[in-house]
Length: 248
Image (tube, rainbow, N blue to C red):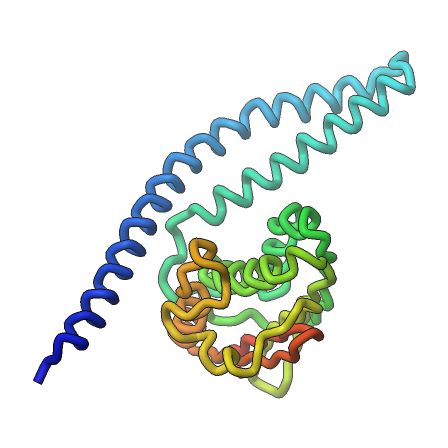
């Protein structure tokens, strides 16, 4: 028999779900608008880069002007890479589990994309990649989303004290490919470690997280035929390991 307490719990969950759906819809609309803005930014950035390169080819340009133009070109290239990355993430292609992904290229793309976010938090991004690994049978954009969720979680946890984050790719055994994401952050309390993949569970302050990021990440990985594990020590850091089976 349903009790008033049960109805209260169901109502609370429904309200939370409604809030999350409304937020997701808002972010989806914002994403569509942003994709158009980003696309428009690429044209002037291309003109700036081309003009800068033409100026630097001139023989009679003073050295101080050449250095300034080189800086302009470098910053325009950086922004161009960032906007292309945003367009790539906003693409609706590869939303199914099918397709292939080179884990090293995907890791490199995500780390380059998050370089600014890491730098402003005082976090050094490191990579240790095995370039002999086979491709994995997963959609590249879904794999990017998995890595983005895990790494952004780590960066947010390290916001106060900085540190480093290492992403390593390896074959732990024949027929498997793993991506290991290890940070030197504050770690996860033992009591919370068994709950971090539960929906709506979060250790963040109210308003800073939905508690769905790692739940969605685990669901995505398992839907792609993989597995995800975590180990953590308070005060030392956290390590996530994502593993996929590959065809022999």
